[in-house]
Length: 212
Length: 274
Image (spheres, chains in turn cyan, brown):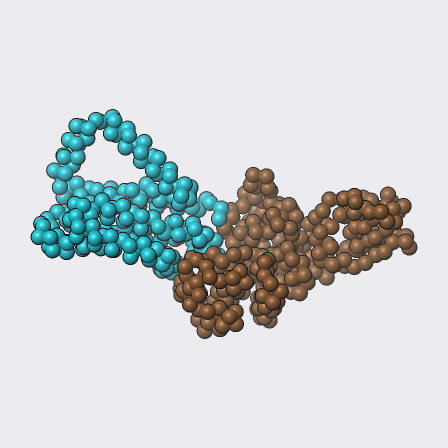
């Protein structure tokens, strides 16, 4: 895949438009971590990590970069592989930065940083699962519509799970998952990686059949 | 081998069908692709580049590393600076010539630090042309590059195309609806209308094959089926006729060599009455 290296560089250059978002993210991560501690900042990290992971697809759509890709000596499958690598990499980087702030903040606040690493890895694994679900929708329907479709599906699934299991059963399930500890985290990361691998194949299949 | 050959290409969208189209762009020449907006020029170009997948037919084209492309608007990240455009695209091309790119930016009067979104339409087209001419391309594909440009910018862009063609192995496919551009640079002309190819030949042959005819109303009935784009008015009629068909016309008819624009317009339009 000799065209992967230049495509990765192009994708990273494309994220230049998101540099303000990155800066805001860094400032917010630090502020939340110092103000509220690790537990408080993790949900924010997860949300922003996913936004950053998906931002490349939004940038490509807004700037009609499929036209650019089509005129370059790069295969369509390489475009998708590169997008996935950058999305997963940026998500991971966002979480790592957030965890660093959270770690420093916990020292400053005199709190225990125990479980921080596990929480961070678990968030990365969970975000990989989310990305593997979201990206094919973005490729198929576009960034805006794809996000709405993903949101709708998530709400439907959440509603079914929430109402179907009931509050107590759900709380019990979460408690048992928490008790599983490192195995759960490892499993989550494994599921996330497998999900991304399957997802990239699905996205390649969609992208190779599209007109640009 | 010709740098671009399309065979039996068809593509159907809702309410629009392109083709079937056979088109050969011969090496060493400028092929003008002319037609009204919505005629199918961009679809044909995108099909050539593999961006649109045809329903049927085959495309044979040189490798993308040897193609320079200018779209009808720059497809770069709006926040990129001109210099970043070069930096982002250079790694794709083994033959990228940075000094050539810098020189072309200077020729175009583009500040390397200026963002894509801050460039005028003309500057945006020149930036694309700078990229297209900086990596040793042998086939240049230009999609409506002069549309919306002021006369000076159009002239500069056409000059660059002419300079590119000083290398005899170079080839250009140039789509436009401005026929005067083609009169300046095109060796071959392909006329496309509503997805169909109406003509594809050398520019000189095309203008020799047709004649603009202005005649009296009394002569019209005899030749009506032979007239393309017939327009009737109070003093008679006018339309385009194949040159051999004009031999038998009476003395009262005025026969002129048509401009490229007259050929395109008359081949495309339906007969009308004023």
